[in-house]
Amino acid sequence: MRVSVPATSANLGPGFDCLGLAVSLKNQVIIKPAKFHSVSLKGEGSNNPALKDNNMFISIFNDFYYNLTQKKRHFRFEFFNEIPLSRGLGSSSAVIVSAIASAYAIEGIKVDKNKLLNLSLAYESHPDNITPAVMGGFNVACVQENEVKYINKSIPKSLKAVIVVPNRPISTQLSRKTLPFKYSKEDAVFNISHSSLLTAAFMSENWDMLKHASQDVIHQKYRMKHMPELFEVQKTSLKSGSLMSTLSGSGSTLFSIAYSEDANKIEQALKEKFPHFRVFTVDFDNYGVKIEI
Ligand SMILES: Nc1ncnc2c1ncn2[C@@H]1O[C@H](COP(=O)(O)OP(=O)(O)OP(=O)(O)O)[C@@H](O)[C@H]1O
Ligand SMILES: N[C@@H](CCO)C(=O)O
Image 1 (spheres, rainbow, N blue to C red):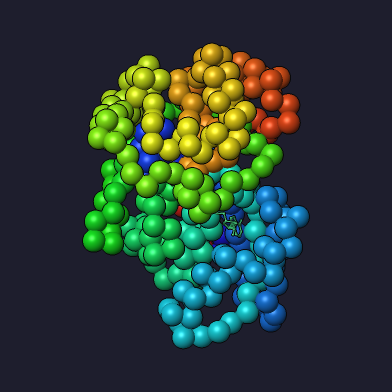
Image 2: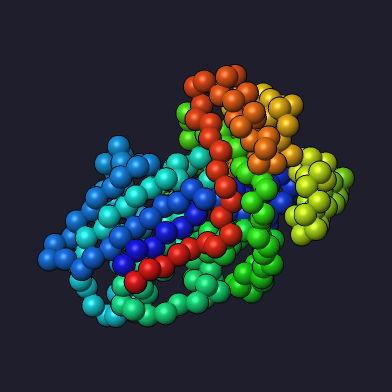
């Protein structure tokens, strides 16, 4: 049994805790029944021994598996991770979604994507990462009475994501603590209007509007000042032709969207200026979690 989940970029500037999209960078897990518990880990996180001994995936999987079957069994878990940890690319959402999907799939129990999304909400209260992880594409989401209400839309092949991953992680929990407790009415209006415009731009495929609509005043500046180089990354990306460039999730990744034909030029400019950061270009993912039994 194999489950794969895409990386995500949440907020997209003004859409704090409500907008997110999926890209074609994936974490994949293969699980087989076995005589003894064992774990193999390749790719991101493979040099982190804690991920073998105390893995969030395995504890969520075990909880769900036991609740579903009332049985305790041993499995071999083979992880192939492409999503960098704690860099704002939805690594924790990918773990949560894949662990729950796997617990159902290993027993051959069908779980639809809406149910999977709402089960994931118990572990990740912000719907902007888990919704694209489950559904793929661009998503607008909010939570009402413990249920995610969302609308999503595919992103065309004519766009690519140019991603800059800094060499330092940022934990979501700590990054949220750097934000103000209160905002002015002006700041609230600024973000509501820009987030609405950004949503309309994605829905109507008005890509030239992204640059104007992706501005934010409620979280990026507070977070990025702890890694000031990110302001330069953002400027370089926009100057080199990206359509928008925003902090990905809670950081530290800077995420840009570009027309496919401009992506290589932007990637090269960023690589030249920030040789100590990882810079690469990927497609968008319009499918979300994939379960193969
Ligand atoms: N592949 C993985 N296997 C096991 N645990 C993981 C894996 N990836 C992430 N985690 C867990 O998730 C934590 C990172 O979660 P965090 O929310 O801080 O970052 P993120 O999900 O990458 O960022 P964001 O939510 O802003 O997109 C790690 O410290 C680890 O506990
Ligand atoms: N919307 C969330 C994304 C990370 O889970 C944040 O910015 O903190």
